[in-house]
Length: 122
Image (cartoon, rainbow, N blue to C red):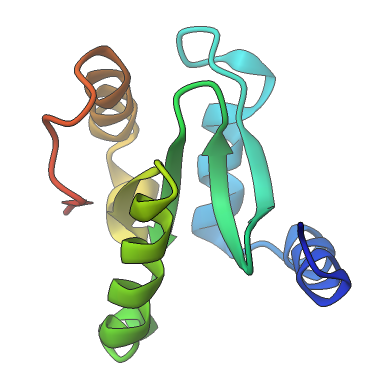
């Protein structure tokens, strides 16, 4: 069950995406990547995932520079998501904005070979 506060946060985040999130959404929306359906700023338990493909239980995160300061929080969050069966793939904002091919390639590899990729892609 998703709380009302988590749903409200997801709505606010959808309304105010970062530049990297907007660019990543332009790649993922409309099943453009191998026909995969992604939701953006989607509640997953008490957290909000930047992007989630429910069919493959794959979460995509665009990480800005502030994530270095939140490493402990991100580790707890990722551990909980993994305990629920999700895989988390993180991209730096720089990679999202400069190397679309590498981002799409990493997502495709994650879907084609579940469990064989690292959590972070620089």
